[in-house]
Length: 500
Image (cartoon, rainbow, N blue to C red; front, side):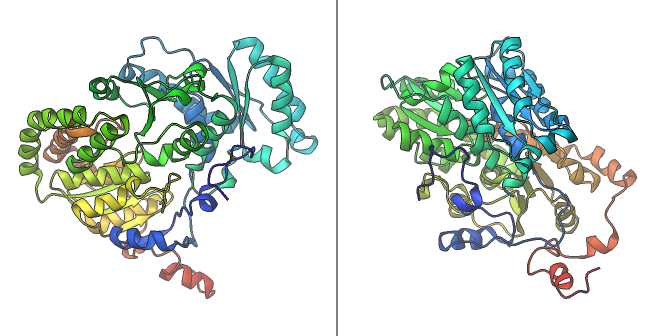
């Protein structure tokens, strides 16, 4: 069965589609070598938390300027939507958007009675009201666990509303229980967008390149200019029209392969837009490959070589200077899959010794099926393996355990709430929300300067360590981080009836 199938109302989850896992402990090289042979996910006998696919689907739909979003479920499930509305507003200067449109976020507010009698009628009424109040050009309906459990026929309600109102009503099936891999929510959002919004191309445009991204700064405008092209960002600050004709672009590139794996494959397989056969440009060697792959895809190899030569002449001296100051320092990385691998690339390029990582899931292969897109494999080839490589679905108790034992010189994180654990242990910690900040040759300098600043200015975290309280017991900190992972002592004890 093909990985991409737009005839289905719901996207096939990552565990089934590309064999993604959330449980592994070992080293990066071992994981890379095992991935082509097939991986078996390892369960945990104790789990502290899980990310929700609904929040990831919200991340991609709330940020569409002329759309509206309905969370079909209890009102509490809509809380995560407002987080992204805030990010959308405060990050708009990074993208050069002076006046981002107000976000339109609603909830059907399912009550106990609705879980007995069904919420379909309530949803239909909500869609009509949202259209009347906002005039949105598309309405996205995000399903929650409650809606999935009671079995509301969301697809039929949306189809009937679409026929009545004359605008796309996009059902997105992203219940939290659907998948242990929370990034399935990205896939669910893009699946709905591809089914309902993207249209067949009217023409093929050589001057437009799709960029599947979160909300990072507009670095691609300058990068694409030498190739005579401009970026079409998907989906932050996009419109229903720019999404509809993303099918006309000359190519699609990824800022994060975890995020865009599915949509990149859809645009290529169903709409004929080739996906760049390269992992995102983090580190010198991979940035070289990325620009050369882009030049080859666009038939402009000479332009690519010129860009590479000019940028290396400008930025390499400063990179080497930073490398000299950071050489031999140790670093630990915690982030989502592809961006975590990107941060490991930056560590390798800057001379930091990556002594461990907590990566939220692992995709053995992306939807394109191309080996060139495998960023972890590329990292291992370019800079060597990473020990203490933990794949976990944001289990903070494992992160604290590992940091307490390893005590790196610096912690690099992608998600808010993770750096506080390093700080409490007296470890300088760096969180940068702009995922484009570390891309390209100039991105190495951006991160190098921030890392050097964090390491050299460690007085605050040292003081915090002396006055903070660690909620985890001494017993837990004495165990191995993978104690509760299948094969660890904890799960064996539970299975044997002697769990603590």
